[in-house]
Length: 452
Image (tube, rainbow, N blue to C red; front, side, top):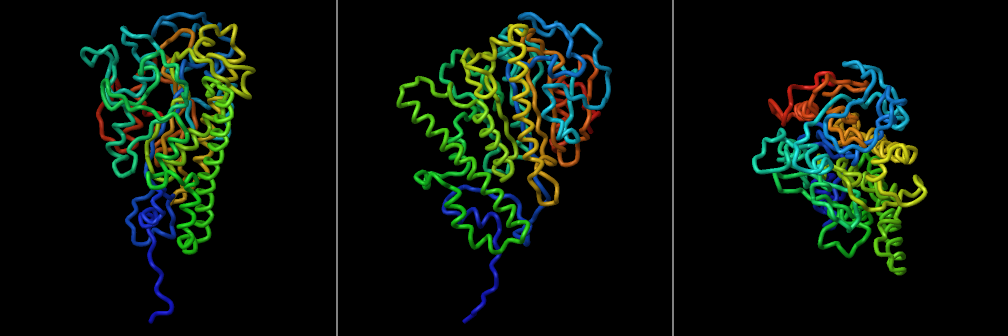
C-alpha cells in the first residue's frame, strides 16, 4: 500500500469538469501548466459603444471654443468650421471628457478624422450602431436599406473564438421594455444581413449563462460551489497563483453581491407597483456590473470577443443617471439641444468615458501567463457611430483604442487621419493584428499604419 501517493496532475480542464457542474473557467495558472500545450495568452477583441454621439467640444482636442451646433438631420455634410488637427501623430491632449483616461495614456490611442458613409433610406441613428462593425460597403447589399452584413466581432471569432465556450458575447445596458424602435437601433452585432445576434441585458441572466448550469439553478452562489471543489486544487498552487486564484473568485463573488442588491431593489420597487423599476435603478451601477461581467468572461477564457452597448440609439425612455444628473433624462433628446443641456451632456460623456477607463485599468491589473496583462492582449475600442449628436454627422468619429493586441499595436498618441479615411481602415488593421487574414474590409482603403 502506498502511504504517500504521487501528486496527481490538475489541469484547468479537469478542474472545470469537477466543479460540481458549474461552467466556471479559470485564469491561466503556471502551477497547472505542466504537461499542457500552451502557445501563450489568447488574443481578445472588445468594443464599448456610446449611442447618440458626444459633445465635440468636450471630447476633441482643439474644439473647446467651437460654436455649438443646432439640431440638423443632415448626414455627412457638416464639418467643424475652424483649424482642423494636422494630419499625423501627435501627443495626447486630455480634454475634459477624455481626462479619466490620463492614467492609462501609454496604452491608449485617440484616433480622429475617420469617416463612414451614410446610406440614404433609413434614420441616421438606425445605421449608427447597427452598421458600426459591418463588413460591407454602403449600397453593397442589394434590396436592403442598411449596409449591413456579418459584423467584425463574428468575423474575428472565426479565428480567435473557435475554442472558447462562447465564440462571442453581446451585452447591452438597456433594460427598458418600451421599445418603439426597430432592432437596428438597439444591436451592434449581426450574424449576417437581417440576422441579429441579440444582446443580453439582465446582469443576472448574463451571470447564470456564463457561470451556471441547469443542474445548479437552485444554487445562487456559484462561487461557493466552485470554491468548495477547489480546495484540493488550491493546495497545489504556488504563491503567486494562489493569490491570483483568490483575486479571480473574489471578483466574481463581488459581482454576485452587487446583483443581489439590485434584485433586492427590484423586489422592493415591485411591491410599490412601479411599472418600470429599471428607470430608478442606479445607471452607473448597471453599466459597471455589465462591464465587469465582460472583463471576467475575457479573463476566464469563456470568450475572447465581446461587445457592450452603453445604451440604445434614439430611444425615448427617461433614464435615471443617479449620482450624475439630478433626475431622469432622455439622452437622445438632450443631444438635439446642446446649448440648453451642455453641462449635463458633458457630465454624461465624461461618465461614459470614465466607465470605459475603469475597465481598461482593471484589465491592465490582470496578469497573464507570460507576465503581460489582459489589456496587453486585448484590443478594446470605445467609439460612437455618430460624430455629433446634434448634427448627426458620419464624419470625424470619436474613437479611442486601448490595449496592445499582443504587442502588435503602438499606442500612446493621438492620430488624426487624412480627410476621407474610412473607419473600416481601423477595423482592417485590428483584424490583421489579431491574425485574421483579409485584404480589405467593407470600404477600407488600406491599413492604419500609424498604430502598427
